[in-house]
Structure formats: structure tokens, C-alpha cells
Length: 81
Image (cartoon, rainbow, N blue to C red; front, side):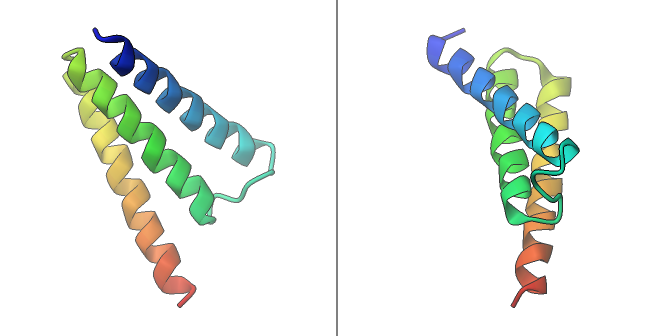
């Protein structure tokens, strides 16, 4: 595994855990775009890392997680128009 792929994976994990922690501590609302963007970015980074390592179940999970985040962002955008 390349060092860049490893760094991308660690950053993705940190972003996802941070998003979860912020919502759990009520510092960030799950209905906010910032939370969904953090989930989308973190899962994209982990999907890259997982795919590079041939971890296809994890890659698939993170692609689904990305899709959920994208749909949520779309709904947030249309709600506040």
C-alpha cells in the first residue's frame, strides 16, 4: 500500500469519527450540511483506501455511505431553497 493511500484512509477515518462524535455531543446537528459533507468525504476517503487494499466489502459499504450522504445533502439543499 502506498503511503498516500494510507494517509487518505486515516484522514477518512478521522473525519467520520469526528462527525459521529460531534453529533453525539450535540455540537453538530445531523440535519446540517456540514455533518453530511463530513460523512461523504470520510466515506469517500475510506472507499479509496479499501479499494486500494482489495477490501471489497468495506469499499461497498463506504460507497453506500457516500450515496446516503449525497441524498441527504440533496434533500437539505432543496429544503432550504
